[in-house]
Structure formats: C-alpha cells, structure tokens
Image 1 (cartoon, rainbow, N blue to C red):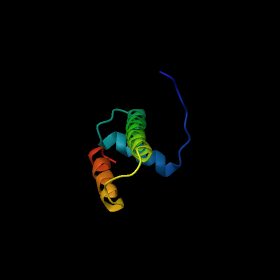
Image 2: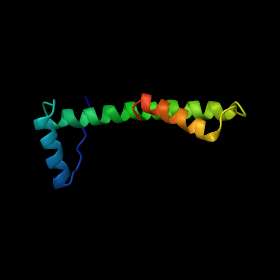
Image 3: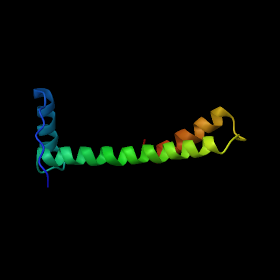
Image 4: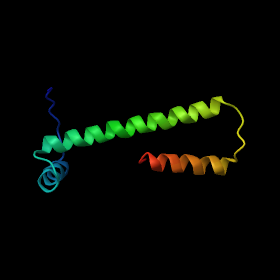
Length: 82
C-alpha cells in the first residue's frame, strides 16, 4: 500500500479523529480511505448518468417534454444515490 502525507487544518484533523473514534473505523486512515472509495463510487455513478444523457442527446428528438425529462433524470439520479 502506498503512503501519502496530507496536511489538514486543525479543525479537519479533529473531525477525522472524531469520525475514526465514533464511527466504524479503526484509524483515521481507514476513515480517509472510506471517504475516497465513496467518492470514487459517486464519480462512477455520475459518469454513468452523463453517458446516458449524452446517449439521449445523440438519439435526437424526444417524445417527452423537458419537465418530464428532468423528472425522469432526477428519479434515476436518486435511484443511483446522487
């Protein structure tokens, strides 16, 4: 496993330490690794949604109104946890 040193403000360090103590993490590093993994998953979900938007735009005209499209997009994003 690679090592990375990160400088944090005192408030941020206190927050990380507190999360490591009160949550399901053994160490502050475990908490930071979990944050990074959750961000990676979120990013992948956003990319998947963007691919769907790009695909829809490339397909041409839609039978749905813009408000219907936004409603569908919001529902799909919500289902993805975004």
